[in-house]
Image (cartoon, rainbow, N blue to C red):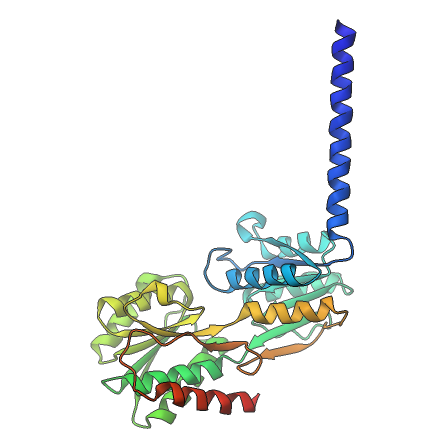
Length: 323
C-alpha cells in the first residue's frame, strides 16, 4: 500500500512538471515573433484617469491590432523608477517606456548601461541616442481653450492655475493666453502656480481666491491639485477647464471642456512604427493637432456663443497648418 501511494505521488509530480513545462512553452509561443513593450508608470499609477491610463489604453489597442505584447510596472511595487525600468529591460522588452518627465533621470541612468536597448520618454526631451522623446504641442489645444474661455466669459476675467512654474506647464499658459487675447484683446487673465500636483485642497483655495477676484472661468493644469480647482469652480457656480484627459466627470456642472494630450494615440503610433520594422531610437517626436496628439474635449455646460464651433474649426485648421 505504501509503495502504491508513493507511485501516485510520483505520477502527480511528473504531471505537474509536465503542465508547468507546457505552460512555459505556451507562454513562449504566445510572445514569439511579437514586439515586446514594457511600461514604467508615473507615481500616480493605473487608475489615474490621465497619462498612465491613456498609455495603457494605447498599448491595449496595439496588442489588439498589431503583433505586440506588453507588460508594466508601478512604483508602489518597484519602490523606485530605476528598479522598475531595470526589471523591464531584464524581461527582454524591445521597447521600454517611461511615462512622464519625472522618469527621465531613471531612464537615462539605465539607458547608459544598455546602449542597444530602445527607450521612450513621454513629456521630456533626452539627447541620448537610444531614447526617443515624445512631446505634445499643448500650446495648440490650450490656444483653443483660451479662445473658448474668452468667447464665453461674462466678466472678461479668466484664470489659470498651474502645478509648478516649469516649462511644460508654462506651455499650457502661453497657448491659453494667446488664444484668449486673440478672441478678446481686453481679456484679464489671473495666473497662479500651486507648487504641487498632489494637493486638491490647495487647488480649491487658489480657485476661491481667483473667483473672489472676479474670474468666472479657470483653466487648471495641475494634476490632482487641479481637481480641487474644478470642484471649487463647481461649488462657486463658475466654470473650469480640465487638462490631459476629459475631466468632465470631476465636476459635471462646471467643466466646460478639457485640454487633452492623446498619449494613447502617440504611443500607438510609435509602437506601430516599431512593429513595422522601423528604428526610432534618438528621435524627438512632437504630436500636435495635425497628428491627433492634442485637442479639446467636447464643449459642455456653459452658454457658448452660437458660432463658437465654426470659430474653433477655423482655428484648428490654422494651427494644424503650423505643424
